[in-house]
Length: 197
Image (cartoon, rainbow, N blue to C red; front, side):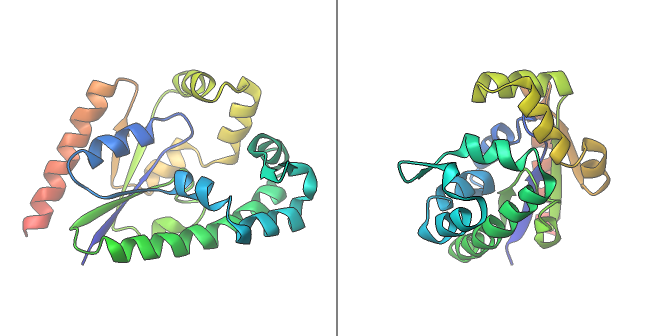
């Protein structure tokens, strides 16, 4: 039976970097945010988004993610509406992907809102990636060319590190990539040991 490793962390914590590092050891990896982004272009989701949020979030028939983000990160109930549209589709997509990767001992399910979405309940092991707040904000500004204010709103909409850590088996502190990789190596060793039993 394939074991699911849930990998999470707040925006800018570097969880995708860690996910890709673990993937380099041959562990299949599902990056929920990337898949959700692709699936959001599907007819099923775009129709539901238009019905819920109106035509204003589209430009020339293409979803404008910035406009959508500006709406949902200002109003918690709008974020809930968005999640109610996207999550079930991603969940179905992941289940199909899992079936295709059922020969692997472990797979990694990487999601920013692993706990908020309830996906953590399906995981056998949970790893949380953390980093200092300022480091996270700087990383996201550099990556998304967005404002500090919008990033802080997104951070506020997610669980805190304390909440995530309280429900995790392992924590990777990622202020320095070298230290984070060493911790990831330790976790892999532990998992390899449990795998042999």
